[in-house]
Length: 299
Length: 324
Image (cartoon, rainbow over the protein chains, first blue to last red):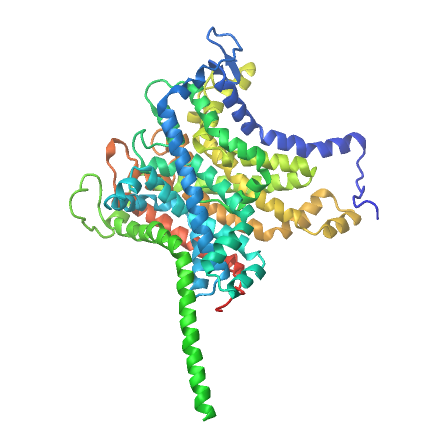
């Protein structure tokens, strides 16, 4: 059979055309809020003011492309905040990647007592909404602050503390994902290496990890975006602007009692979106597959 | 002689393999250690702390004094709180409406629509629907606030103006509408992706056979597609219910539970605010923890349900390299 499509419809011509167009129309309508939202952000970033979706320049006329909203780039506070965001995101990538891969390898390839229990535990933790524990984690961080030397770096109201919490809460997802990747690897090279006397750790580092690069990349991207966009946890566990990250800083600017410059905020938002958009454009399939497996305490 | 020699050899082998087994268990625990420590510190200990906290009256006014236990007083206070019915009602309303309209309803509609059109177009629309989820929450809320703004700034109002229907800051007038929209647009993408893969996995033969028999598109969807994605449907429903019950970030950013007194306040938001972000700096950790404990109990219960009912555990695969 040359074709597997069947023309069994009894409609013809115009009616068929509209029938086929309806899904496209409906879908286009459905994405309008998102499209409009992004359109406003871009327009507002480059305008003096906006009325609805129209850019307004300083005289009150429509139009006027301006770069004045980008003046925040000369403000050192912004760069400190951006670096904070970046450090949190990178700490998460390295922390979650490393620790999950270690644990997932053991759960996937090693036989030890309590393995089944740990497996169930990982899944339980992954399904459990960790956001409910924020109140208690406040006290945990407070106690960590009291540890001499280390406490000032990773305690309450520090970048290290925020990163630590985020890494920990992201672990069940990371372990689950990495275990899935490990399960699909073939045993041959591993078996050969172990028979030759290599230690498990060496096998892990030199043989398994190189084979798992796509999985690690996917996890890294997801974790980076998670850390870069994080609002709730940094907001909950930091005070002031020194330790804030980008989203928290943006929020602080909006909450001021003084009238807010929405266009400057929009520019800040677009600035924040840069890495998100880069990944969005270049790693689409990866994003779609990862985001179905990873909803952590949020939606 | 042979017996005892055999016995000695067996015993020696047994102790040797016990040692090897111990060694391999230690090895495995070494791999698991970093994760184990972090999970202990940030999952298990907080759960215990939360339960204990809810039995105290710790607040910012008695923070420096030794801990006083008040038994179940916080829980009694919670149930007799003036706004308890409102918050409970809000939470149920929010979860049920958002779930049916968006997290499951819209997700299913989107999955069906995007799988029935050109593959690339379907991919594009699904990608667009993923945008709300990956946009940083603060930026995402900013967009919605501008959409709902009063004239001359608001975008909805800009479209309504030619018809003379321009109105106020819509967010203040219809807060629930926007709370549901904001959360729904993010929530729908999870189900959409899961349903799409499930629909695409349906063997084409069924569809072909139905078409040969003269079934219409609608009949195919109703009688073949939907029954065949029963499991993903059920899973998404329960998983998103838990998600909606415990998430509050967008509500916090959008309305902070207002406008006014507790108009859009949900359970999770109340727990968070009372314990951590009360204005005027008066944090009531004990009281807030009581609200939180209820959520934790629901969370643990739901997680166990996922494990049992949805057979999460069937992912277990016996490792092929045993003790060598």
